[in-house]
Image (cartoon, rainbow, N blue to C red):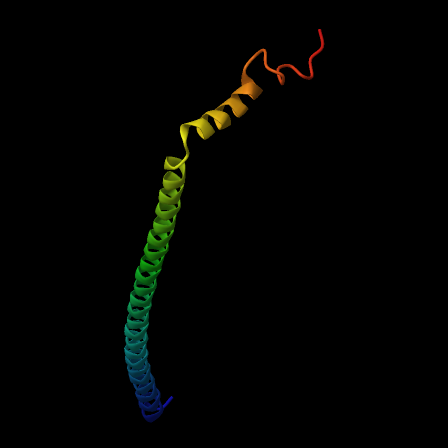
Length: 114
């Protein structure tokens, strides 16, 4: 090989090495951009999900408060109804159910034979 050919080969190798170095640098910069963009998207998604969670909690709280109000209104209505029952009617209801469970009443051991 002549000196000139060897120099051409070495110059080509140096040029290739510089091109590889420049390409690595561009790839690294591109990857850094992608990384930053991805991180930004992730942070935005986290914020969006946190907002959805907060809104979901608020809706659940509102629904629970509404249902609790309904339960309280129903209970208050029942209390008011029970407060208006006179003692005679109340005794009738109690005796009706006691006859079913007290021994010696008409419903006692209806399915049992001696």
